[in-house]
Length: 318
Image (tube, rainbow, N blue to C red; front, side, top):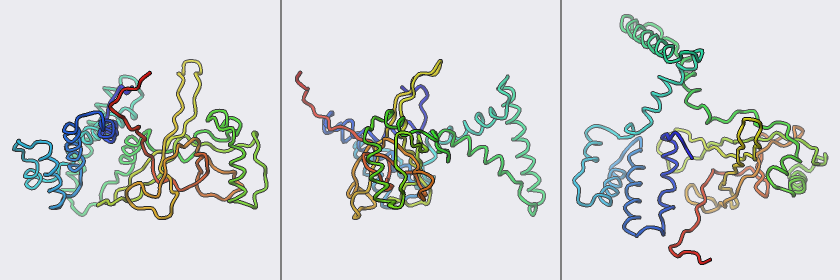
């Protein structure tokens, strides 16, 4: 249950709407939902061409056959519509709330946040006036402030370079993720990939375990150069401890290379797997990246994915 919805949660829900409604709605209702989602995704494009505008119009026609709307004309006359979303107020929340709260001492923080914002607005206005008076003046360095904004914006999203569970015994990993064959499979993997490594793997052996792993998605027919980060989680059960509530285990599903003839888009050449553990090999082994336990070991994860069952219309007889 999510208590505070944000733009990120809504976007993630949009990814599964059509799949959840498939085989559960009448064909026309499904086509209507499909059309509006196509329209929503197309309006987010940072650039438009005649082809994309035509796709936008087609999606709109499928949703509003008999309505005379003016989205295409508005984009042509007033620019792209990618700013008309929750991203703008989300950014203002960072500038006006999060950073100012961090600068306070957490006591009467509203008054302190108001003063902090007022002072920064005055500094910005004075800086603009000084630059207007002397255009050749060196720009004021706002790097530290912008770093604070970036930190606030990425809070909870970026992976810490340090493992979340360092020096974890393998016996605990086997117990927490339910993998009795972990030692046998890891030993076979090390023997195949690193034949010179002779140290036996036992339940007392220790590895650095990661809760999330952050990967950069490959470009898939994209028209800009922005990077997309994909977070893959493999978090074991956290038992109740005093006032801390129990946290259930979380193991993401991913798409993995199994065929060299993979394509930039589509699922050909990939198979779905569930990540049970993300960890680093012993320091004696030169391996620049963590490995994942998904019943077998590999480093060719493409991205996370969401598995949805094929729903039918018939009820199950008990």
